Amino acid sequence: MMKALTNGSVRLVSRYLPDPFLFAVILTLIVFFLGLFIGNTPGQMVQFWGDGFWNLLAFSMQMVLILVTGHTLANTPLFKRILNGIASLARTPGQAIMLTTVISAAAAWINWGFGLVIGALFARAIARQVERVDYRLLIASAYSGFIVWHAGLAGSIPLTIATEDHFTQDMIGIIPTSDTIFAPLNLTLVIVLVILLPIINRMMMPEPGREITFQRYDKLDDETPFFPRMATPADRMENSRVLSVLISIIGFWFILDYFARNGFQLNLNIVNLTFLFLGILLHGTPRRFLNAMTEAVKGTMGIIVQFPFYAGIMGMMVSSGLAGLISEWFVSISNTTTFPFFTFLSAGLVNIFVPSGGGQWAVQAPIMLPAGADLGVDPATTAMAVAWGDAWTNLIQPFWALPALGIAGLGARDIMGYCVVALLFSGVIISLGLLLL
Image (tube, rainbow, N blue to C red; front, side):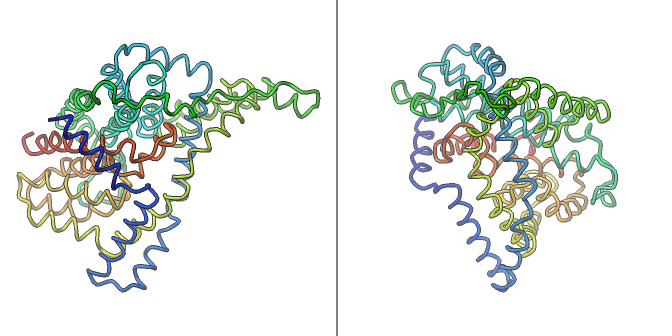
């Protein structure tokens, strides 16, 4: 039954899911016409779209850098040995799928950006060592671990409401992470998913002889080309280890000072900075580092082109009132018991169109928090229900898959069939947790 469900999902997605860019275009048109349906004028919707179009520029650059610096770091000899050493623990395709899921989930729980990159890099390392493991499912397994990010140490919603002067403080005060990230409900859901998701992914393995292995994507054999030393001063500088060491000292000085001042608080900027300077140092010379960067940049096209369109979609969803309307409808059919469950579903639906944890919370918090208070639901539970809904539908949102796909060298159609199955099972697990716990 599981293989039939998986095969059907893979066939359906392969046939009907367009390229992620077209997916963003189609979402844009859907939101545009829905905005007209609820009373906005065409001129207003165009204005909302245009006003939001460039709102993710800084974030887009961060995502480009996390893909490029992570890819470049993985291509260093030392990092390859580390990844290969851990990957050697997997002896069979089934073990490879399960180990990749666990490593990815653990990394995503620590920091979502770290998890996106590490999961994909580790999957590639395993794919090179374990024969007959399906590469598409392996990358999908790596991406599936991302589902726990919003329940982890870098979850934007729990960290926001634990911070002084957050925008909902007048409604709910300051809620410590002991009531959100480290609450029994949240930790139970994380533990259950980390146990069951690897098993679910393993059950989706294709029948022997039907695997599509890494060898099919041999274009990803990314050994960094080496250009020998030349006689000119410029060539000697490009191949100088001294320059790499000196600039790395400055970079690591800042990184160590950051952790000394802030504790172990990871964010995209510090993850990117760490990956960048580790790459510079471990490649040895500027020329080797630049060669690796040149290869890595090839996978960034999807992020550069598509993220502005998602920013435009977010602008229309928020300014037209669509996101609020969706949230209000789910509130209208809720009671005290079902409110966390319907909050989770509403967040999952809104996330398809507003794929940003912080942005989604800004839209839904003013609606969900007062409604939850009226029903007697703990605001920490409401916040984490939104967080889980946001993380859940990331499994089928190409927006977040683009960095992993860029590293893997795959397209969305290659993995989304498996991700749909993971979405269904994880949705049941999270829903039962919110209803019963």
